[in-house]
Image 1 (cartoon, protein in one colour):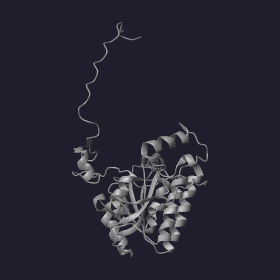
Image 2: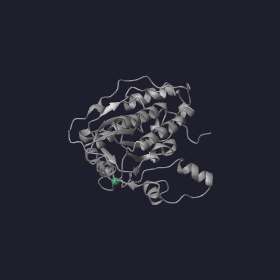
Image 3: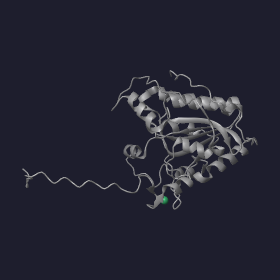
Image 4: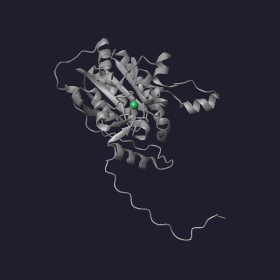
Length: 304
Ligand SMILES: [Zn+2]
């Protein structure tokens, strides 16, 4: 029984006055709790000017940072998952796909483009975390494999920027097969002596870490990015031990030889360019993207 009984209905609360500050003008940095003006953050490549906390950026933003003049020709923008398992968890996979396509404006969790990186003709694939956690399904696997094949065809270097929760469980074993498919294509790239730089950003986990993200000729990572296979909580519960400070973060992995460098986002482009040149890539002086830049027409989604 309740101690007090409300016999009368409470007075309706006064309506909130509309805030005069438009939403999203200021952001609080999770690293140093400082309030940052959104435009300042954008001009600083979404890195906190105070403590260098790296905010997550989407795939389009990522490509804009890396390609000269923010220009690239996109490949296979039309590939869409066919929902091969007709999968439903808390909601149907088809509905999940639809919602993600609407919210991100892209058809799956990766954008592939070709353009110039500091004058070097390069193919770059950037993963989109906002699309079902950047998970790798059939479409992501196919697009990345095609990116590698195009790099082979054009004899140009490849860069993959990973940002993913791993394989997409809604496509089951078909997702896992993408790991082998991409690795097979990367082996061909290796035999053709073409450079591949992998950039790992926060977070890169699961089947993506376990396949192409760790297979770069050079593996770069952004500072303090979460990189691992299983999540820290799962590991802790399994081995029943407290994990060390900074476990599965870039710096920790660099210390133990899992990465080649931890690179600040503001120096990422020049670092990749220097690495590619070191590996023999040649800078082309003309500003207009060459023949390989013409994207193919949208193709039907692959079956497996
Ligand atoms: Zn900060």
